[in-house]
Length: 289
Length: 331
Image: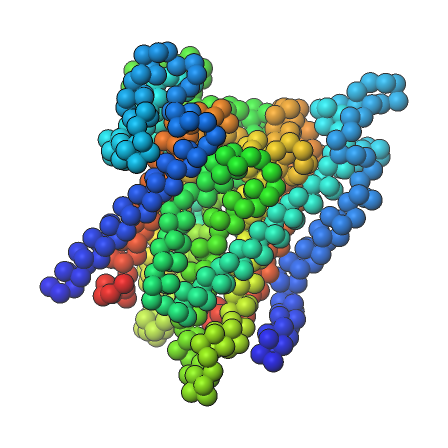
């Protein structure tokens, strides 16, 4: 029942203009990712030639190539559309994993306290002592460049933030009267934790999830840009790396390197906007009166 | 007196905690680089080393001894700042890192100070103008700069100001071949500052979001407190209330954020330094990893982590010592 209430609150939250804009952006990008194969006029890796047999290199935007072509004659628009897939896959998978691990650790740590708490929080401290991007780079370089390894590295480094915040929320909740009441009626510790406390921290998990989407996508783009992302998947990060390495900046080929960056900005921004709407739900004190 | 003793105990506890975290990170790194395929010497000895260099490193790191002895030697070497020889440059890692550290520190400090100076002013102003159309437009814009990949901001800067308008150089820290009599002279030269401008500006643009939003919400919070109402009742002018009373109190969390961000940036700079070919610690790490220069990668990573952990320690202290509401009893 309480969960149903939370969901209703979530729905009403969409009336917040920030959260609404964020969800709208997500839906748009998910649609693009799903329909990418159909939207893209060319194979993103195909090397194209002009009618007179010349390599279609660095063409300016026109009707055939909406955003022009790369230095090796590939269609930028097709790359952009298909690049939505790896970004969203990394973003969503990493976010779900970060939120789940963060919630589990936060719950166990905050509710059980004692030795479990000490061990888990020490672990979190250690991970927080690792510099994020350098650690992702080193891990991906040692394990081999692939989307899975990138997601793994991002999740390993991002869960402590969520776990810490959720733990402190659990600490507060555990003092509340309804928990005491449940204990008096003879509910087991696990039941209290899962049925009475867990549903109350779900919005917070969701908040951390939506922020983690952004960090994961930024990390994936940065790692790909630095050349550790593997070469088999076209993503916005690899597109920017390609543009940078092929002197697109020098030639002022804005149609090549502006759109992938803008896409990243929009997807990451959507997460921030949603979490901002959520912050007001969670901490009404912050709402400006 | 008691409060004083508690403070000292608090600082001591945080310091021990910092050392603990650093020790674990060093240990993880030790095993990570040992577990790589090949025998332990792959982490320290390049096939192209001369016989003499090979012998030196073998002895320095005890690579012919059992793993637990290697580990002790590794820690002892770390404490002395001995990170081995770089595979590519064939020079001690520590010297290479110290040579580029000033560049990284300077880039980070310039960008941070610019971002926080702008951020605190703009954030306070946004709080003052809350509810206005200006605020409604500004907040998503500020969020958007925080959502931008730093390297992309850098690329736009390069395309417009370096290649398009030709106002700034496209990369590096000094014109090739320039000679300077001292490090200070190099850093204070006009040439260096011209090279610094774009990377610092890109970084500052990315960074200003946090102080703006933080300052704004702090101001909104502080403005609701009693002493502000008091000042209003006393009839003090609004401007003086905002600047003298509210802003001063709202700045405190920004100091903590500054310290934490500084620590994270030393490592986070990897992308900006790469885009602008800025010879700093982050770019050194990227190059080392890309070229499988393990000793250099290990050293750069440890130094970056050490700065991060140390700045978190500083942030803890600043927060604990400046904010009168924090007590130092217990955990």
